[in-house]
Image (tube, rainbow over all chains, first blue to last red; front, side, top):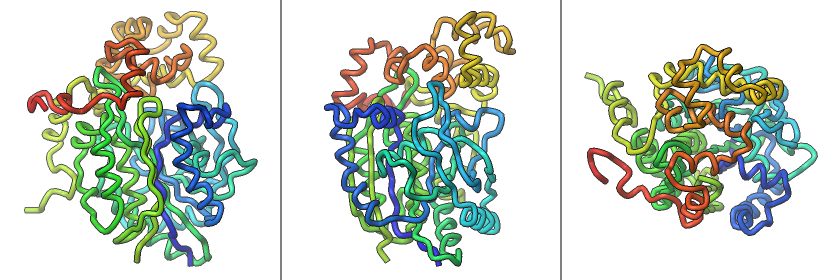
Length: 280
Length: 141
């Protein structure tokens, strides 16, 4: 049977993609950020996951204001890197896993999650930057990807609790897939950042670190954080952290921390990164 | 009576009202999304190279192809991003405008803060803007 072996959380700042694509990861500004991913690169190379369920948000790339799905799952064969206004990132195509994706989509719908199904789309930095952080610059990504796109732009976005419950449902769905697959769930975005208005540039390292603490162990307190708290404490774009809770929900009752990294700043954003495994 | 959902809200009015209590922040609510629909879709159109070319040739003529308000068009021409947020713009859509201008997120975002880009970047490098005093207008915290 397929099994969820680990969860990874990471910020997905577009500037990180620029640093990778332009060979600047060793520069003084970027080095402390990328150093925090070295452990994970080695670990991923050993783990060799078959599939990653990659939770991210689209930043007005594949979706515009015409259609706003709250939760969408990519069931396609492949996804091209999006042209976000300065040409697509020079990274490999993202290869899907339609068999498992459709199995998860069907299971989630039966489990009361009314998913939007995506067969074709381009994927933006929200999805490709985490791949670059974990796998570097290979000729082809060494893993298949099932994108889960979450609306965290137009309010109301889904609650933290709903995200956690979706994660639990993804776990049940994966565990009922008959093929023996090593599956990871990644939650991306965050941590504190605000990209708009006179309050732009807000960073809250204390709050971010207590959120990182809360992802580890058996507490489920994070699922009850209301949107207003993310907005006040972590800036208007810190709300992306609800996507980490889908990953956390998918890991079961208790987690163990394998790796943790936090750095301020990258562009306007606090970088956070965790590697967790189910602890039961 | 049913309890409200964990972490959620049972009352959309209370939920939305709280958003107006955050200093210097425009939460992208449904009301703003409706007001800014054509503004954001215009910005989205700049994802295509052929549209960027026409836009650069004549910004005003390009804007006039969209059913936007005159106020929105003037704010786009002036690159007044705070005004555009008030008029329903969303930052990820507005990013298509400043990317076309060749500006990074840091450069464009700094223009909304009243700081120069060097000053803003120095603040970020020193750990960013503290949340102290900018969490709540009413609560003054």
